Length: 254
Length: 50
Image (cartoon, each protein chain N blue to C red):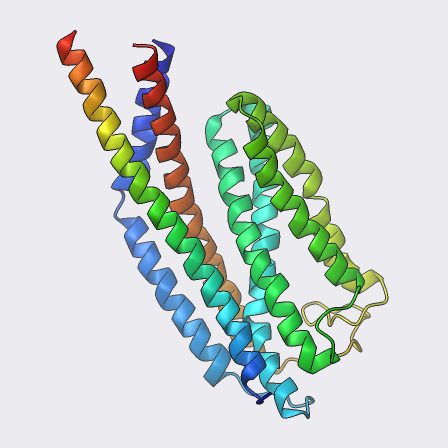
């Protein structure tokens, strides 16, 4: 009886998430925004005036997708922490689904950051990698959230899995503010282009003109919409997955 | 390496990771939708038999 009630709730959740036409609209808008962001980053935005070497100047444009990817990584991990806290307080399954969806998307965006960073670093710093505080903390943060996904896979009991994952996500979220302050508090070569504080002289740093700022802000907006779109689809997928599990249970215990 | 090699590689990373992520989402969703359909039919048949 309890399974049937949950199954009915699950069916409603799937119907809610699949029935709305606005998800298709959001997906199309998101795709268009990403293409406009690409155009602005590669064509519309001017070159950074203080970078002399042609390869360094061209690679600087990686910044327009590198920074928003990092922003989405941070945002996704914070959303996961808030959803995890709400799960621990309310024990509602939807918050567990939100946390899982957000971490998965955050890990994907952080993968973009971790791969594009060295590609930008090579023409700017002349090395692919250095054990700089920002780079090291970013790597630790990324591995922590890969660990979150592995933890979920290692625990079979769904309630225990959700509870453990929620506590883990709250602890892992501490890496986000540490990562933010790493380039502002400690000696580092990673440029703090956004809200630089005292650190304005790092290698590869550049002042932002109005057009560069506009492009960056637009890319941040496009990536945020892209994140929201992916969240909608990933939550829908997780609802479907849980519905399959409940249907299997219903068949087994019929 | 040419001036644009790093730029092209950097942007390739974003699009490849994005497309792989979206592809896995879509393929998982399709297979789950099929599974739900089959399981629902099974449940319906079972309830009709009872």
